[in-house]
Image (cartoon, rainbow, N blue to C red; front, side, top):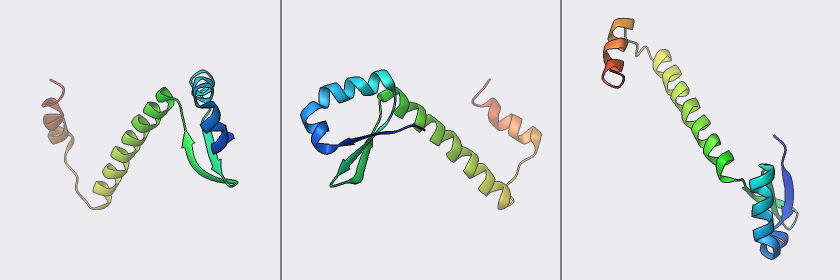
Length: 87
């Protein structure tokens, strides 16, 4: 993923412009202080998409942990459990 770098002083002086640029470009910005990255800022849509992806990946990881621990159910039981959420 492409990232732009901005000094914290630039953010302080031009916050409105930087935020407008982020919304248009959707390119995250690394915010530096004394030459070191201290934070990243992203537009709202990119952030929300990242959170959704992380939620999905977390669910997959939990499923893999359950499989490794032998916590399995049959296909029929899984269908029965899922029917509660998807009638």
